[in-house]
Image (cartoon, rainbow, N blue to C red; front, side, top):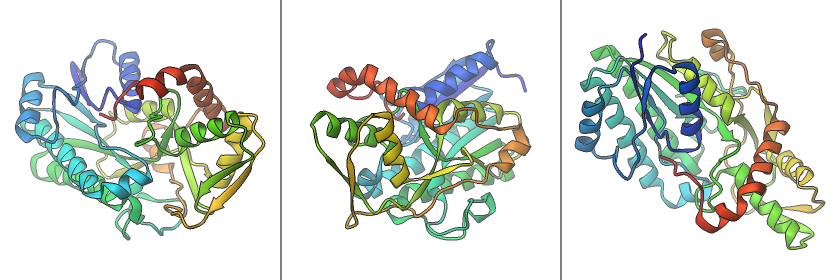
Length: 321
C-alpha cells in the first residue's frame, strides 16, 4: 500500500512519539500529520471531520485516548468512557468519510474480562466484564474496536485492531494524576529513599501480575502491523509477566534502596493477572519483543533521574493525546 500521507492521532503522546519515529524510519517518503488536542478536539464530530477532510490521508494510526492510573479511573469513570468512545468513533468516521485506505486502532489490555484464563487470548475478549476500577475505559475501547470491524463489514474501510498491554520506557508520563504503575513506583521509591524512610506503603497485597512492554517494542509492532490483512483483535505485549511485589523489589534494587514494603490490603489490587498471548502477532507480522524487562526498566529509571527536575517542576513533557 502506498502511503503518501499518514495521520497519527495521539502522536504527541508517550507512545505516539515513538510510533512517529518508527514511521519516519520505515516510510521516509511519507508525510506524517499529528493533530494536537488543543487544535483538533477529536471528541467533537465536526472538528474531527474537518481535520480528516483537510488532510485526506492514506493511513490513520489511532492512538489518541484519555489515559490514567487506577485512582483517576475510579474518580472519573464517565469521563473515561465518554472521551474514549467519542475519540474512537469520530476517528473511524473521519477516516471512512474522507477516503482513508486503512486504520490501525490501538486498544488496551484493560478491555479483557477481570477473570480470564492466562495468557489472555483474543477470542476471550468478550467473555466477561473488565476489572471494575477501569471497566468504563476498557469497555469504551473495545466497543470502538467492534465499531471499526463493523465499519469494515458495511463500508469496506480496512482496519487493524491491536490490544496493547501496559507500556513503559523513557519519556513515560510521570504526572501524579495520570501516571501508570511503573513511573508512579519509580517516583515513590526515589522519594522514600531520599527522605530516609525505612518503609514503603504499597496498595493491595502485591499478588497481581502484569505484562509490560517497552515502548520501542510496542511502536515497532504497531508499525509492522500496517500491512497485514486481518481485522480481528491482535494482542501486543511482552509475553512475560511479573508480580507487583516483585516489581517493587526490582525497582528498589535498581534504585539501590533497601526498604521494607508494607502492603495496605484495604486498597484495591486491580485485575488479578494480566498476561497476553502474543502468538498471533508473531504469526501475522513477525512480532518479537527485543528489550528485556530489567534492561528497559533501568533505561526508564535513568531517563527519569536525568529529567526529573524539569518533569517535577513543569509536569510531563507530553500529553496523552
